[in-house]
Image (cartoon, rainbow, N blue to C red; front, top):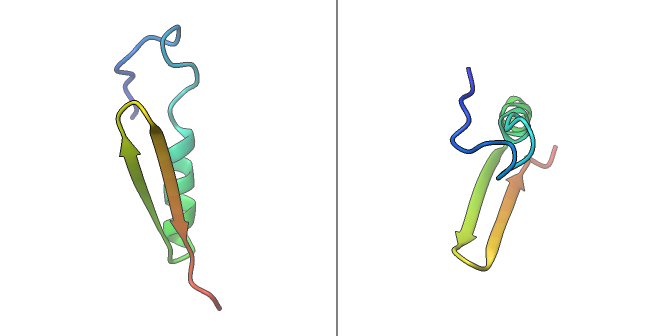
Length: 51
């Protein structure tokens, strides 16, 4: 289901963490967004309904 683009030496981990978060958040009726600036970093935004 998942395919690595880089070796684990370059980027450790399995790569399924964000996919798991996305699925869980969507099941709760929310959304996941990413804002990224090259050389500065990334911000992950998770929005959930307030109920």
